Picture 1: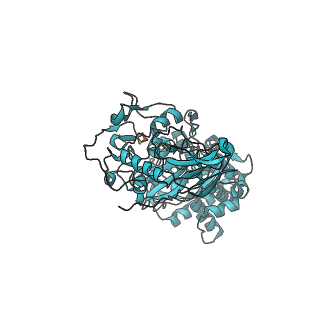
Picture 2 (picture 1 turned 90 degrees about the vertical axis):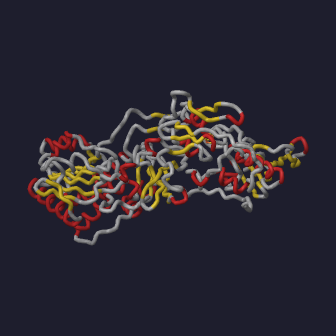
Picture 3 (picture 1 turned 180 degrees about the horizontal axis):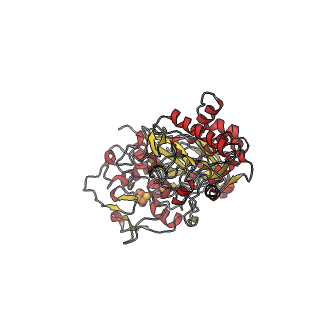
Length: 552
Ligand code: SF4
Ligand code: FES
């Protein structure tokens, strides 16, 4: 193990990995200011804020520690065993102040109206390493605001020319939409005429822009970032398993950002996932149980709806015998939802058929040059739902969605419990027709063919479910990686997580008081891989500044 000292702090590192001085510092939570460096892209060492005074052993002088005469860019300089980095030397500090002064010469200083305020490296470093006054008295150069793509706005006069965004489109997506145009103080980031920034990962440039130059149209001026509560989450739209941060205020989701996980999504996520949560706050969300009276659904309370479900399913079982119930568990649900719904099915009808709901697929997986893959499978948990249902039905005991349709048409099934939770309409006319005379319980989040049907053609009981951000659970992604996540926002009033609905009905069948759903307890009960091979969200690592704040 090799080691360097940064301001006297011993920082051991793996010498074979040949990290830069900056990487070693960041790994040990020591802050060295940096703009152009990003661990996911090539090193250009252009912003110069990370320069520091460094002394390292000279092999031609008995390995004596010698000061390198010039400041070195720590992002580009490999760590040498025994080297020392001085972040508080007068030379290092005067460079930091000079770079900050230079970067702010033409900056509009419009923090009060900038979305980036509160998470802006320019703002933070200005406090920590900058100066409290400006010597610049001339007119600032004004640059235009540009609409560069469907999700991204560019406020050019806030740009510090770090070129992270340009390198992202060159190295990570390979789409090359962004480039540097012009020279000197007239330099600007822009897109080529007729070629907007519209690749499937385009909005990642907003996250990597260290200042407020690249902004999210969807989040623009909607909330100050310091009012957002962050909860770790997992992609609930596709089978990627991307690690995400759900950012909300007073129960309302405002934005989704990627969380770094080098084993899954690196630093990125797709635009489809980032903006795929709008249905969570749809005004059309189902928010009350409904029971069909004379074929027309009427809002009711949970107890009445539960009574209707249990009494009608019991009558069906007595009339048609065991095996007449089909339970379809959507791949949009969590493993815990699936397990408890499977248990409920077995209690209702020991020979009930269990199946995974339809799994939407759009084209083929697409992997970008930077290694990120956009998944064709547009459901987060097809594998996890099947695995959880197999705990109840045994291996090979879970049927396909087509089997349920055929069984309904062929007269095998006379009752069905269907779960949805898809972001858009999912019940086909074919399935609706197949359900025909069967007693149908629908647990779903949005209206569709079974809630808005003609009298007598829809579901008999409708129970409002919860979207994945409103409940805790586990998803298994396309690579069979199981990841659990906590509840990010409160469940919509009038709705319940599917696992809670299953627990309520199980308690009613057993004549007990209903238990409150606890995802961790459910996983412990499920056992096997659900008890010992589920990845929990990593603790957020925080880089603490060792530098004192300047007095303003
Ligand atoms: S727009 Fe942002 S990411 Fe792109 S060069 Fe300017 S400061 Fe860097
Ligand atoms: S981070 Fe080192 S020069 Fe920009």
